[in-house]
Image (tube, rainbow, N blue to C red; front, side, top):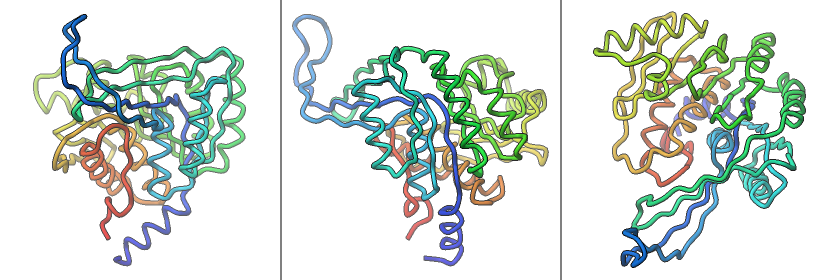
Length: 314
């Protein structure tokens, strides 16, 4: 292993990342498809294997921990079997979990049925968390914040980041960088974040359509300035990703060799970006590594992680 890789690994091992947001349990049912149902024109899948993985903000935390960072996760789950499973999986991934239990909340579950290595169906189970539990979570955030080097707010639009403006303000007050993976059309709530990481579809919701690369870049820089962001990173699928900052525009072409499944790719991007920044790496280098990580993870099935040996080689 090269000396710079050893140095990077040591810096990451000392990095402390706090992930906050909506967690979910990703369930996969794998099976064989041999015939069509006589009841409706749909395939019959004979299930022969099941898997459970961390999803949402929990997958962001899993990606950060897989790269070697000291990772904490703050979120809300229900008092149910799925919530217990998430806690177990977080423990197995060496993530310091702070899960607030809500007795009126059903833990979010995304059930995917896979046949012949292709997703045939996804079924979602979810309810929003209660205000009392969210208030307790905010208080816990203020307690955990001084002990971290960087905060990642993973917004899946499920209600877990109701107090996101207060979280960003608190992080700014302590000069702790805060990265946000956004959702919805109200980006004003993300004002003053350090870096925002929308994908192309999410960016289009708030910026509108464009007819040229020049117009796209103009809209992106206008959004960055209007929200007072240090940087805006737009992930563009097969076109790579483009970073907008006061230093100018930096485009990273895709490095994906084969796209198998884009599920959770955004989680990998923001986790890698956050880990690199928390380890003291400059923004352009962090973006380059996030882009490389995205190219690796889309070649895997379902929500997955990138390991250090995959990112930097042996």
